Image (cartoon, rainbow, N blue to C red; front, top):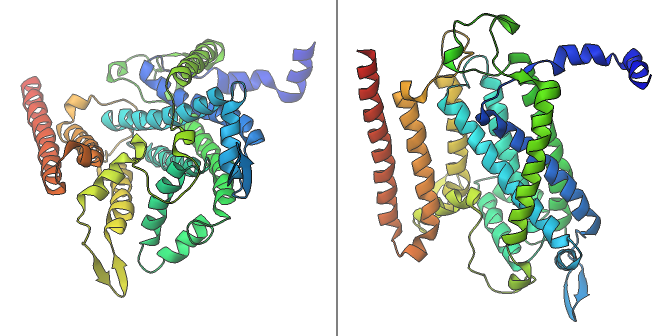
Length: 413
């Protein structure tokens, strides 16, 4: 009776026939998108719990006999509550997993050329999702307001401030004044819990809408099979109920894995770094920002250029221009690697020697810049590390391109 009553008003059967009967690919690589979605859901749920206990303020309060900022004290108290530290760690590792899954998802799309016509827009949406997720991670850096948090965020502040002509204005807008300001923590809290999650939800919605409209890409082996939905046969299982059951099981397994990881692998111990105080601790950003940090290490400290009264410094080059150029180049890929017809099928990376070699060479370059963040530990000079980075990048690109070109010629013969 209830189902009939709901169906009369909401037309649930029509909704199921139109949307829930669509096919979902069975290949494990397509679960990367689900990992992104499930990680975001976990972040929202754990973030709600943390939001009830966190105080976004720098007013001084008493903590174990010492006067410390309220934001720092509230995080310490969260860790002392039952399951508090566990949930905070799950929140942390979910963010790591989300960023890693987006990167792997983009790599799958790149190496199979699934970004081609008509999916250029979805490529840009996915890249935007990566950028805004990095922004979410960055704004979350500051909220514990430990010495580590303040030092890490200050690096970004001076990067933004170094932008010629408008850097001072933009930095004051983002960071609520000169660093550090009393309004910085409340503003970053707003970014982290309100503005950025809304943007992420919008991007995920657009991404899913485009997938429903354009459908998934398929293996080349499906070419020539009997046509069905949309003029081509989709190999997979219906979203409801088969894929829904698999997705729920996968989500529960993901939660279990995150709980185990959070139980045994600690995160930045704020009680060790302590509340903000004079002095700069030895610290490095998390892996997803390490490539920018490492590139900064490779730039000579005295390098600067003045253009029309605006000064371009190493911070501008490494912290603004370099990541901006990388994202711009990646965004242009679908428009530089175009095909004259609609691409519904994945391309074998082996059959694309140049693009595959370019992707692997680019990955090698970014990995080497991340390694450059440890040149003080490795006892390597910036000049030597720069040379190693160029050699490794060219070697990977040249080696992969030559090997795949030879293979393609042999298979063609």
